[in-house]
Length: 222
Ligand SMILES: C[S@@+](CC[C@H](N)C(=O)[O-])C[C@H]1O[C@@H](n2cnc3c(N)ncnc32)[C@H](O)[C@@H]1O
Image: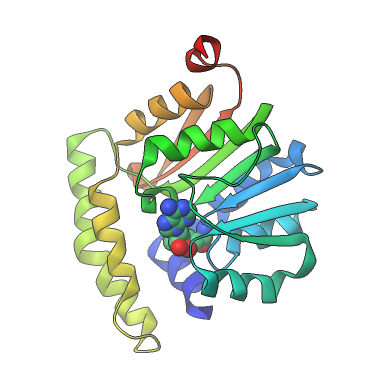
C-alpha cells in the first residue's frame, strides 16, 4: 500500500497529486457538507480533502481491506462504507459533493454510476473526477495508448522492485481500453449531472472533469 501513491505519482509524471489537489480546490465551497470519495481505496484523496479542511468524508469502496487501511490513517472524520458507485446507499440530495480519483474507469456501469452521483448530490452541489484520459484525436490516443500499454508497466515494475506480488498497475491497461474518449465522457457527465468543464493534461492522457449539479433534461422530465 505505501508504494501505491509514490508509484502513481511517477507513472503520471508527477501529475496525480497536483490534479487531485485541483479537484479538492474545485469542491472547496462544500467543505462543511458531506462529501463522497467514490472508489476511495487507500484514502489518498480523502486525506487531501481532510488536510484542506473538509469536515465529513464518506469513503466508498468495494474493498474492505483498502477501507480499513484508509480508516487507520485518517481517523474519525473519514467514514468508510463498503459499496459500489452503481448503487449508492444515500438518500436523494444528501451529499454536497462527490469526488472520484482514478476510480471511475474501474466501475462496471459508467452510466449508472453517474446517475447515482447525480441522484445523491443536492442541486447546487458538485462533482470532480480525476482520471487517466483518452484523447479524442486518434494520433494522441495512439501515443497515450502506447505509453499505457508499453512504457507505464515497465516503469511501474521498476518502481515496485518486487515489493508487491506481480504488477498491479497492469490493470490500468484493460480499464483504459474500455474508457470513453475525454469529450464523450464530458458529454455523458453533462447529460446526467450538469454543466461540465473538461481540463486535459499530458496530451489528454490525464483529465479532470469539474461539473455542477444543475437540473438536466432527465430531472425535468421525471
Ligand atoms: C486505482 S484505485 C484509486 C484509489 C483512490 N481513489 C486514489 O485516488 O488513489 C481504484 C479504486 O476503485 C475501486 N472500485 C472498483 N470498482 C468500483 C466501483 N464499482 N465503485 C466504486 N469503487 C470501485 C477499487 O476498489 C479501488 O480502490
